[in-house]
Length: 226
Image (cartoon, rainbow, N blue to C red; front, side):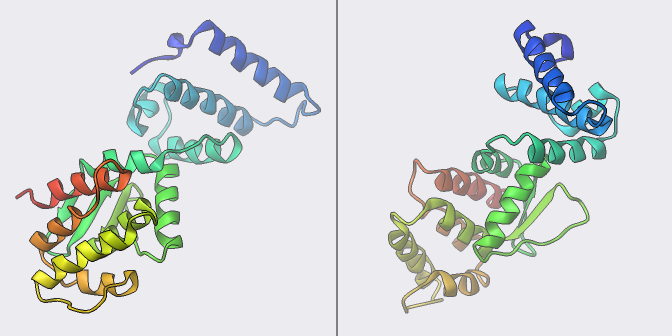
């Protein structure tokens, strides 16, 4: 884990200049400690982001001497006040590699450390008509296999959507689930009744080179693990 002294001189100068401007620009005395904490945390996150260094709640908690829950609250506040572009799709792909698949409930259980990434994923899924299960562990994303496939379809986009749906229909037909035309609306109901092998075959329907295929490949490897 890197420490504050690893900030470059330029980063330190820029951080101080930004802080002075925010504190003195018609804001003297009203820039609260919470505001300062959020600002300084944003600089820390930006530092790690620029240097492509991984960091988690535990590492930051130990370094800053505060609880992991406070770290998570600062993450959310920092993104609201000083937003950064979140590549949540790539983050999801990495997280799926270490996910767990519950064979009894046909559910992907994915640990998402960053609450901002979690919020982006939840918003995307729910906005597209998908469903996620609420859990007491706020780092755990639980999503049924049928909604996971729909998530991949949405991530893949419209370009070859009909081709992918036709491939999925053929996989379901092999299992005698459908002979009729398949739509996204009817797909989730049919997939919900499928077993592991069919789900694994469906995940292979996504063409290589896309973020959807990257996630599908990782998910396929996970569900076939015994």
